[in-house]
Length: 397
Image 1 (tube, one colour):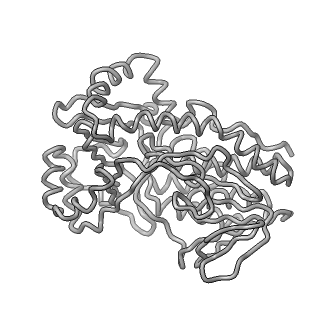
Image 2 (tube, one colour; image 1 turned 135 degrees about the vertical axis):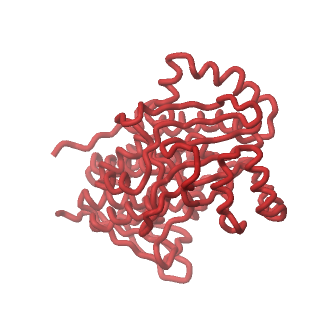
Image 3 (cartoon, rainbow, N blue to C red; image 1 turned 90 degrees about the vertical axis):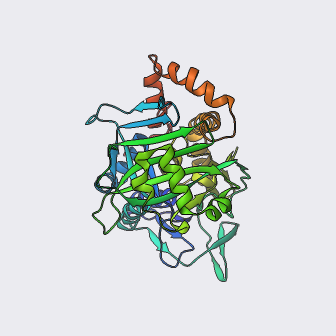
């Protein structure tokens, strides 16, 4: 195998490890730098949509991910007070070819890490990236490294390398991982959500198993204003559990497993997109290039698509780094723009203080969404292929 390119990746997250696997499999020297002493994931559960699953299969990690996660065939949401449907999106019929994959970040991380290492990528931990210049990376308390033929910034929403200045969103969410209760009427192949207007949203996502654990897990979430986390902590777990059970009795067996506030991690969201996701010797992918709320469940998928498109662009450009970055940006431009726009439009209907938008959502938009061909369009939107996710194919050998 010919190793003709020395590529550095900042960040051992979903996008960084996927890019490492894809580029190393193509025969390039790849080194991934991460700040953790022992590389590990952060967060709870997520949904890998069909477009993201395709990337996992392309890098040889699809079967392992399927073994760890849970297939999701439907996303269903109800209004708490009236009990009427507010969201109802099917992928395909159960057992069909298209489905989402509910999976814990730790399980996905393990799968991607194995793929990257198996492909020959080097993982360097204990290196907190602080900046870059002239194709070199700089680290906190350590010497710099490089020069590299290309630096990939996959260091997430708090990237020190990205010029993106995203706008904070008013609402975030608390997330936790719990055991799937033996006594529950909720199906294990659906994402379920309950809403009260747009100021309350809670949900249960089946996510399969954690590494080294056979117990089936669920990710639970609770929406709240980004500024209200401390108030939630001060009010106490029992008050929250009582409110959650009143809104949605089926949520109680999940929420009852939370005994300390620290079990619920607060996620704050922002929205923004780099007009030019590359510069001199550096290219940005994932949250370092574009950020949005998780309302459409596309965050991890966008990172996977970015990683795959960049690997394809690099092969297509045949070692011309500047051209590869331009091809990557062009290939991802419209898919990113459209999904960012749709996320911006959908989010206030489910996470905001508006009293008007929930009424429009329930009485106008949802009934319209059940009229053909809109159910099919919504399914394509959630699956991630409302428009082609990228436009570069690998050159033929």
